[in-house]
Length: 132
Image (cartoon, rainbow, N blue to C red; front, side, top):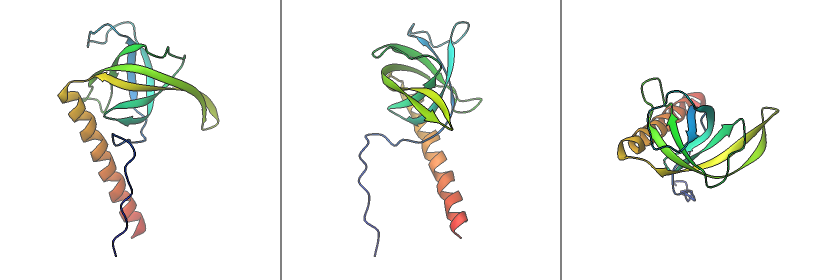
């Protein structure tokens, strides 16, 4: 008898993953040279991310963001800070900001979705091998 499907409560599939992100206050310029800050994702979806940062960000603030999916795949995104909290991760206090994607072109969305589904497929294969 097949297992009952779990209802997806989120609008977007979310992947726990740590990736580098360059960000700065919104300028609308997708070129990242000079003044920017680097953070790391703690999770990612095509609708937003949780971003580990060194300093708290202001809720409602718009950000220019460059997400490093790999060395060659660096989509430009415009994010909006939803809010954040301090959390203990690996025994270290970290500031985690929730960021929704306010503007994203179709190519960037496709890159993120491909990355998430490719990563999930790799994890499923690894899990299947571990159970064998």
